Length: 138
Ligand SMILES: [Zn+2]
Image (spheres, rainbow, N blue to C red):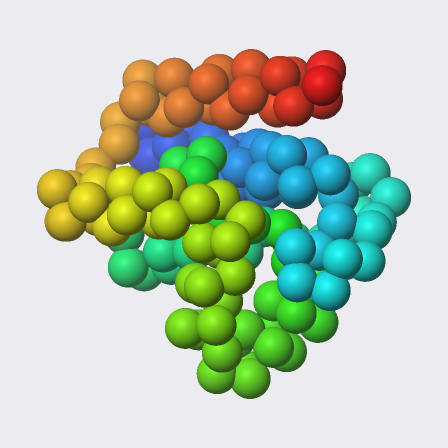
């Protein structure tokens, strides 16, 4: 059985997934960075696609630069099922700049594992929330 602390952590992780995705999609103007289709706010048909996958780096899971917005069909159909991982990274480089991708790879190397406590997660949530505000207010 999960204890109270662990329950709080899981809840916050879920909230962070949502905040991260909202940030990525808002920053990318609610449009797919591959096919350029635009979506209404909060649409679930547009997703935040991780550049370095969650399984590849726990440390980068909620990093604000570790994703670009892709529509469901580009994310799942083209990137994942279509086997276009390399093309996807190239696309991400064009969107975010080569330096940003290099930085992500350095961070991944520097932090092979990560364990975030409740305080860390709360901090990340408030950082993402203010980042969302900045891109909303553009
Ligand atoms: Zn698309």
